[in-house]
Length: 236
Image (cartoon, rainbow, N blue to C red; front, side, top):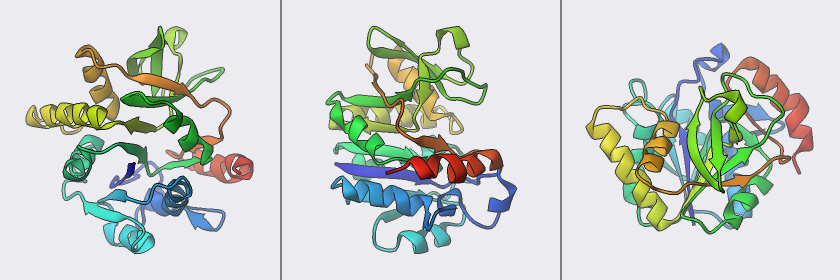
């Protein structure tokens, strides 16, 4: 099992990150990227790739020799799928776990994701209510049938946990679909757009329930405050 962490984005919704990178946000005495690497290492996953872009040198200095950096030269003009595509040569024939650099999470989240042996596993968190910014999913008969921020709240089954596990087969399906998006010049598409395209092709995406495991995506300053004051104390 290998791992991919995307850490190329600008993080423009938190102004104070202009001269740094989201992955370098400190929670307690460690950065988000160090926490993610530690969590992966504790589960025996040591072959880790980090996609860099914005303030790449600072991120590379932080990860030192604990992960392999892959620089995305298009980070200012493209979205996450280009970052993921750059890792294709290292991961397309491997089982791997994917995560973004802006999530503070309890390591048990990794355990829960790895419990399933399906080809594509997507963690979802069930909540009492959802916001417009939440990346939502709809589950029917044990499979994800739609993802996106604009899904009807009445049909929403949970929020995407910003992590995913791919078998060799699932990874090949993912990278093939990403490549088709890039060839069609859809370089600013979201990962959820790729998920929806896979679903339309008949590929099965399986949810795993992570409700109750502490985690938070840090998009805004208020998220960072919540991460430090509410979520971090709950992490074991």
